[in-house]
Length: 434
Picture 1: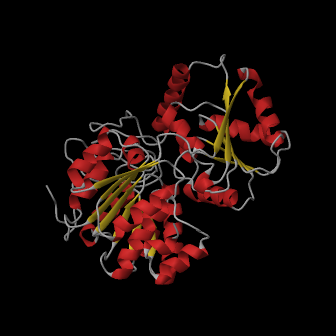
Picture 2: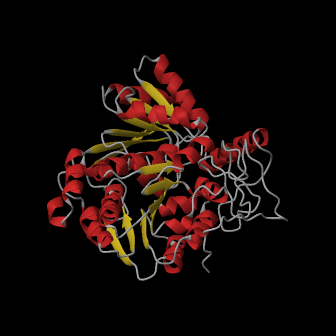
Picture 3: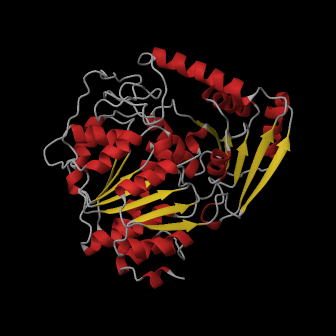
């Protein structure tokens, strides 16, 4: 099948050709016609299969045709917001569409100024969007199409209340698209409550793509650094992503690699300020950095098509995390390789997790007060989810302020609202749906 077979407009076909897309992936071939026709969709598709272009092309065609006036794309992390925004801008360029992004970790004043201009598509993280709504900058009643991208991850990292609140305040007559790598009980709850008359599209099995070769190497814990050096040296010039479990581990490995004269090494972890994270990703994309050492912040939402090698220096905590790490390579049908170090004498995962939580609590007490971490439905209203950077009243795991009754994600730079007196601020123009 060719993109021409999807009966796209000439301008969209032009943008597809400019981006080098030769033929639609399976998820694109199945989803795009349904989106153009206005069908609510729940799409389960493994990572690296072209989901962004699937909903992006569909939305752009609808906006160009006038069937959608303004679209909202919700994403879990700031990195994904930037990357989705960039791809949608490129796809919408021939149509002269305006795409804007809103996410934590960047000064609100800049985003408010940007959003005062006209736009057709807004890509946003949930906490920052709520903050902008409460400030009267964004009116949810203006959107008649919404995409929940990586919905399972948004719920996993504690944005359930924000996502439900946003969906409650969107117009009931809208197009709703949910894209997720997994369809668990919480995703099904969103579907049953907010996506009526929807169709389910499932692409592939719940595993890594077939073009990825996986290898496990058993190595004593004390020899892992030397094995990492050896593995990188055996793949000279190969764009490599190395996963370590902790921030300290990432910094240590970067230092060890540089001391061993491995060139072009960078690092990425959640405590880095957003401008620095963005520059690091851009340098990795352009090959200025060849080896990127990262925590799981890079396991989802990092869309770089030419990563050839993944090294799991520390094993993933679970199968799903491993699948998403592996999905950073072998994207769009390209070949990739995943090497996982297995150390039978390593400290037990539970012990490592306890140490991580100890460091997390210590960090939180220095940067915004004490609290407890909670990710379920009851984990809001004063609880918090780690460090961030916004001066708002709440804090999400992507470092952004939150609203909706002071739902709690407090961190450094933010302050928690009282649980006794939750404050709900909705500007005029919102229509609360029950």
